[in-house]
Image (cartoon, rainbow, N blue to C red):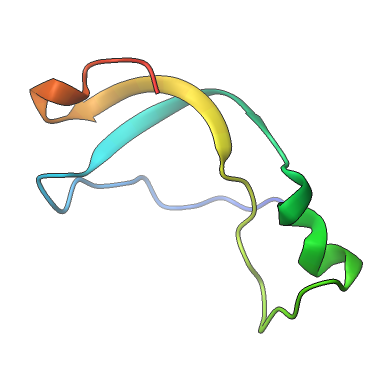
Length: 65
């Protein structure tokens, strides 16, 4: 497991939003490839459990997610 820098996100579609992450965690299913319980074809970004504020996006995206 490693951490790496990523490019700043960009709005590409009308349904996109940029979220400033306030908190996150690693879900049990994120660890399946790490533990060898699920095949992985290469490096895979982990984490899909998060909480944050929408910084950019359509007006209807002005709430906490």
